[in-house]
Amino acid sequence: MQVRFAVQSDIEACVRLVPQAFFTDNRFVPTLHHLLATGRALSAVVVDKSDGVLGFWLSLFISNSLQTSIREGQHPVRHYLALGAREGHILSPKEITHAHRGEGLNLLCFHGRQKGNSEIIVIRLLNESFFLIHRAYHLKSFLKEVYGEDEKCAHEQLGCRAYRDHLKQEHYSDFNFRNRYQPSLVGISRDEATCQINSKIEMLFQAVPPKVAIPKRLRRIAQVDFVLKRHFLDLEHQHQLLFFKSSRCDKNINSTFNVYMHRLYKQIRLDVNEQWHAHRRRSNYYERRYIEQHLEVLYPLEIHSLFYNHPELAKRYPIPIRAG
Image (tube, rainbow, N blue to C red; front, side, top):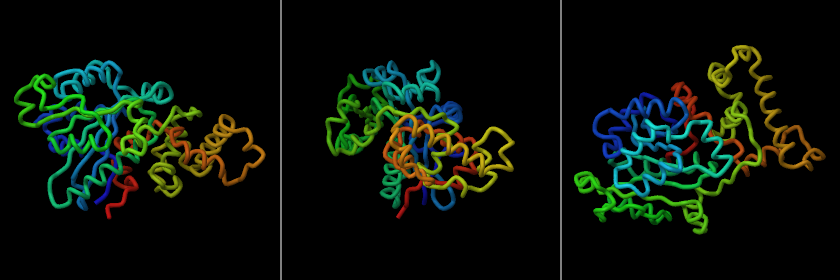
């Protein structure tokens, strides 16, 4: 059992796990594929030894107006997902970068899992990978529709508020949906979360706007090391090439990688702390330590859409969460 970034062949299995979020048919599959392929959504799956999907989470960053509509509305979240995708309220990669470096991001999440003997392990893997991947986003708010009283209480114990509750008729206008799935909308704002010292949900709001604006081509390379915990030059050669747009890198991959990392470390030295010039080491110790302590400089993520569009990457290089 392992966790990896989602790929196109996972989508139908994920949709089947939560019909209350995506309906019982595949009408949402093309929308989800578009969002994931273009970097507007990110998703991870827990898979078994045969690569079958046991559980997943999926995240979107949404506009302020859509966030307000979901929180104050009466419809299931799937209604707003369709509306947001159609009317441009789900942020593009460029808009995500702007919000991450500015006022913060509104995070909307979905999740689903199979019932069974391994359910406890799947839940742990989903939770750990979710926090690992999202910990460096500069978040402004968090929203998630959950189903059943147990799920609602579990999120309240994490520190979330219940904005809408299936026990209150005025919160969900669809009587059949409310009675069948017992939905509740849980979430929290940054101001509310940062008042809850040492709560689990507060961990999602640790990141601040980055002091260094790293170009995405440099972030993409560095994310392999600092997020996936793999040295880029240890990737297979044909996989390394997928990170570069130019075919000229084919014979000079080592030197191209070194140039990229030199530019990254140089930008950090110039933008963060002039004192490092007097204590510089060939190992770039100070620069690497700064990145580890301020991972937000390497965000937003770029690798998730690359892995989605190249499934061989996702299946070869999983997210570093141990199953046992």
